[in-house]
Length: 75
Image 1 (cartoon, rainbow, N blue to C red):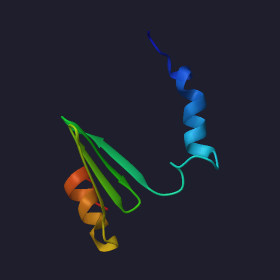
Image 2: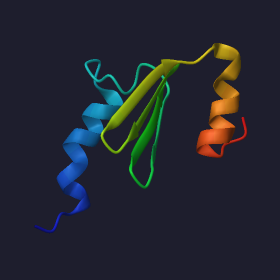
Image 3: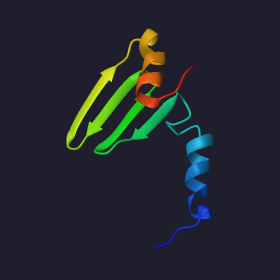
Image 4: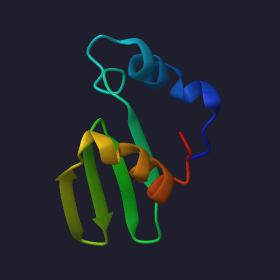
């Protein structure tokens, strides 16, 4: 089924603006990989690699390192 951008308007508005959304409270970054994805939510780093999931809390001083090494962003 083909989708149009307007099909996603309601969920996008909820995600961005609702007080009930978990996506507008803390920084969230996600990167798709060959076998899964890497997600950084506040200080929680989750790596999904195929059927394996690893979650760890990152020290505040290492966050910028994760931005650069994992997501390719210099902050």
